[in-house]
Image 1 (tube, one colour):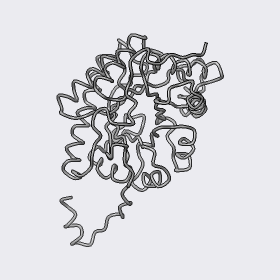
Image 2 (cartoon, rainbow, N blue to C red; image 1 turned 120 degrees about the vertical axis):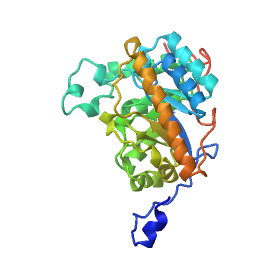
Image 3 (spheres, one colour; image 1 turned 90 degrees about the vertical axis):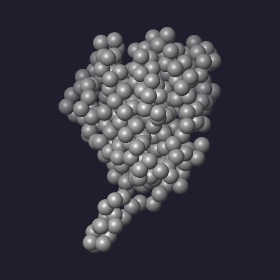
Length: 315
């Protein structure tokens, strides 16, 4: 960077940079772009249009309100839009404690329980949510409960769910150390969302024990620390590759659970996230032009399939 020579000449020393990752996505790319909180077909269409206007590729979108709040027609429309654009559509599994009748997850010390499925009853609804959305073509799901992750992976291994399904662990169960990261991998995670405020050294620790793709908010909403570090994407990718570079939005409005009453805000927020991604890619081109982004429809993405392509055989 511009200041490097001056710092060296005047005796300033930065912290040593961690070793670069040698791991890549299946297409030999270093990184992919993710836009979160894409809460329905109208918002997804806005993201696709905004990406085209900015001249960038969005590889994955994710949603937070839950597949259970989308109609079958909406699920099919999101699947069709994602398939046409060659991007992964990852839907949060809907049933969770923060939506349930219990109060602990909404208490001062209960935030860590928010994404959990309480009781066998809600665990069953959560699995049914996956089955229902899968039947409509969705092939990627956000998981925020380690027991649910294990159950889903076991169903997948038994052939009761498609092998093509992607299990993306949510930031609400982000691992704080490599040992926990490894546990999520053993339980069947396809990609792991790490905390938004990790240092380069901590990313290196995660990467040193696993080749699994890492998801990292380079900008996060205020409840998730409110970091804004898109300009650092190059350094983060070098250490964390293969990395999903994820653009939340600080100073924005909470959306979950979303719906028609929130759609105008959700579209505006999503468009700004795409713009933030475009600006970060300019920084990347300036400082790290050798880093490669996956193209649309890259191997390993949970790109939706046609509705009806898979049907559950269980009653």
